[in-house]
Length: 433
Ligand SMILES: [Mn+2]
Image (cartoon, rainbow, N blue to C red; front, side):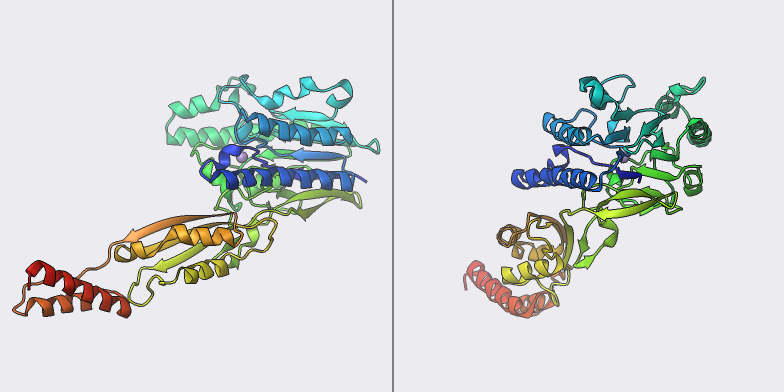
């Protein structure tokens, strides 16, 4: 039986967590390696013929030594197990200038003769046929991200053309370029002599659910494909990469496997305690059944990212609690620790009025949450100006006018008394009465 494992968007790299504290950043990097280990365990347990990685292996074109070593260890496990590793180039693997530094191209020359038949890195539109453990043939066509126009007759580098032309020409060019690419893919597909044909593509497709990849791309001149253009191509399965949310696109056999961990808070697991199902992470096992390829998602155990909103804009009716524990408890309710072995990373978005800002002690809230086991807590404070009433000249005695003023402040009642007491004390001091 033919078995393929489809994954994509590994984004191996420590640079993603540069803004976190070093201990948490280290844990988040370990999460990536943990996902990789889970994938190799699934691959070995299922006895797959090939693992296909639809682009974005490393987070940067030139990854760190650690990132490179960790990916090499994964590849070695696969090759030792006589499992093909088929990789296509994603936007993160693509050097700024074609032909310059591209780590993935160096892997092959390090391999032994026996191994090199099992490692494939495809950086342009091309096809490949592998022989499975049962001596059956499967063909693959690669559509990497943004292949440069140089591959096509008389076409210049696409970024150069985009740089020079106006909006209308850009659109005309992307339309033309897309058609050229799709034609080329069909041609490659028809050349293949194999039992099954699989397309591997690192592309954006209209109407797909976006995730954390949107922080990395978004050029207006990007070639975006229509759902039908891709899913109607004559393949038995389409293994997509680039969008980080696992999803089906247009047909059951056309899927994004999604990233192997949650990269950013664009893919939260929980928002105010509500589970966000689209951010579940996994890989797709593609198995042969009744002469067809059937995809089946397998979940990966990953760390939760939780977003919590706290709103203290209405200081009169919803003031900042005086007791820190109360704040800690409301965050804990909205960011559940579902897996104590992988506690969540939490973003707390706080809206608060300026006069209450000092009442919110995020440092002690964070300390207490870390002690409860959370990986880390990040606060985002938005301060709004309170509507402080104007002091108007009146014939009232100054003490009375001050009481009226404090009365009109949007403050919790017990706090109002304290403020008035303090204000009157100051007034007494400055007036010398
Ligand atoms: Mn990508």
